[in-house]
Image 1 (tube, rainbow, N blue to C red):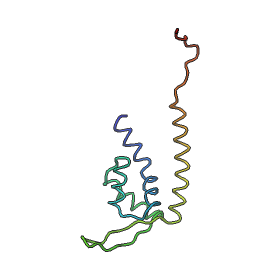
Image 2 (image 1 turned 45 degrees about the horizontal axis):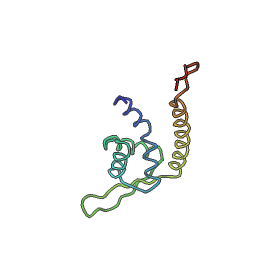
Image 3 (image 1 turned 120 degrees about the vertical axis):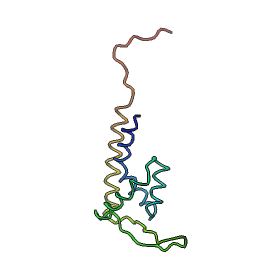
Image 4 (image 1 turned 90 degrees about the vertical axis):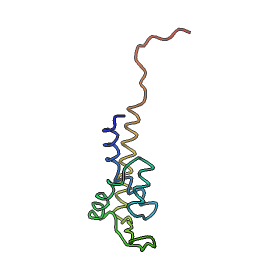
Length: 117
């Protein structure tokens, strides 16, 4: 797959992926980025603007946790609106992915000559 298409696909589902990660565990941005890097190869730099936007949109809330190894970490937690967004986006994704999968299925060629045994 050309890299530009690959990047666009990843960016298109990044918000859904972040919501899914946070549904499993409250987390801080670097940890979320690490999960996404391992799972879909997204870099850390794309997470921070998205997290700010999600907070502004009311999908996540934040709280600080003191760290013994440096400054306090900002943890993100899904709100009820975030859980509702995850449910809605996951349903849309599943429907979309199923439709794409159906398009990718091989189609028998009509009137193709049969191979002789």
